[in-house]
Image (tube, rainbow, N blue to C red; front, side, top):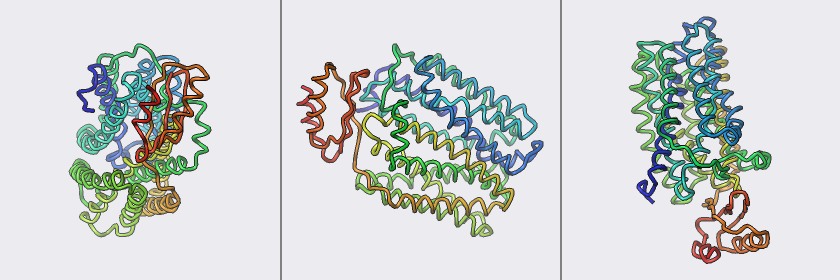
Length: 454
């Protein structure tokens, strides 16, 4: 189904919310390529505190993301999203006006406290039909990837003439633009509903935290973003030491990430179409480990080797960023994907926080190479943990609307749905008038489903 199949309201919702998400993440990411260089001028700055400032947003984001989602069910999506953006603006202003590292840490934590990711996804679900929802989610995911690449360019360009203060003022402007987008462009839903494929359900959190395969993936995204953040504590310093002026770093990051993204695509196609998800997944973790270890071991080998290793790192990072959500979707139980994704996102942001802490501490105590070597060792531990992962089936979720909800009807329907080839799980949710199915795409009989529902 093409994007033209969306209604006008859906197109406005998707473009507005994807843009809003991108603006917010752009404001968070722009700090990464420059902070460790420019923050040395802040009063009280130490490597450990610099690392805390880089990753500090992750702690508050991880802790508050799910509660903000629940709050949006009660107060309304737009109210909560605007409140979160105002917190982000406040945090940016605090950081911009601070002359001490402690002030910037407070500002970064305030930025993260506007934890609106789950509220944005809930609003997106309210404003899109079920058959268009996967496309809408993909658009938001793409916007995050683009914002990361743009941040690598804008961070050095903005900070060179205006310094860190100017960078944070710029992020405050971005968040303010986001408020205009949410009020003036994104439609307001007629009613708010809790969609189990996109929203966190309180009653499901305990089950998700006990799911061994999902926990393996949650640990994976935590380690991945720990490594990413720790890397950006020291890589700008390594580039500077090799003679690259901070304002030119974007000339390295941008082509490296573009080529890395292009190089990643064939691996994604092989993983999905050739059913090679597990070997490709393990290959990507191996590349993360190799690139980190080599960057730490051959630090004096010059800029060409460093750039080549950064290419390997970003290719593997992009591959894992694309693969992990797909695996969460395949492995989450029927009707619990929203909760699984919520826990996964919280682990992702917690990884950013821990990466800042670890990277800053190790850099201060042992130097740049220690950060990269420890990151490589963590990737090897992750690889060992991932080896026992079960090769995932080609599972997908389906949501079937129901017209009748009597106990007799739903009991009979559950039996009939489970009897269909390829249907592995069925959850009927009376409040949503819907049945959530987990189906094996290779074995699923679509015609049999149509017959049962006729």
